[in-house]
Length: 100
Image 1 (cartoon, rainbow, N blue to C red):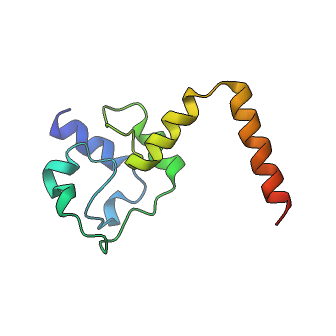
Image 2 (spheres, rainbow, N blue to C red):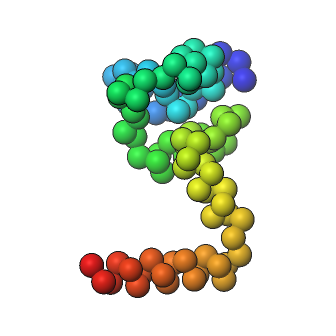
C-alpha cells in the first residue's frame, strides 16, 4: 500500500479531520509510526463504531480490516463456524439475555 492509498483510506473515516488518536486502526503503517510495543495503555483509543471501521477497512489491504487484533480474531473464529454452531451460540446468548 502506498502512502497516498493509506491516507485516502484513513480519510474515509468520518472523524478524520478532528481525530487525535495516536494509533489509527485504519492506518496501514500504524506499527511503523508508533511501534505498538511502546503504545501506552493510557493513550486514548478509537471510539469509532466497529461496524464503521470494518466497512471502511474490509476492502483494503489493512491487516485486520480496520478492526483491533482481538476483534479480528473473534470475527475470524465466528466466520469459521458452521451455521448450526452459530445458531447454538445465538440461542445460548438469547437464553442468557432473557435471564437478565
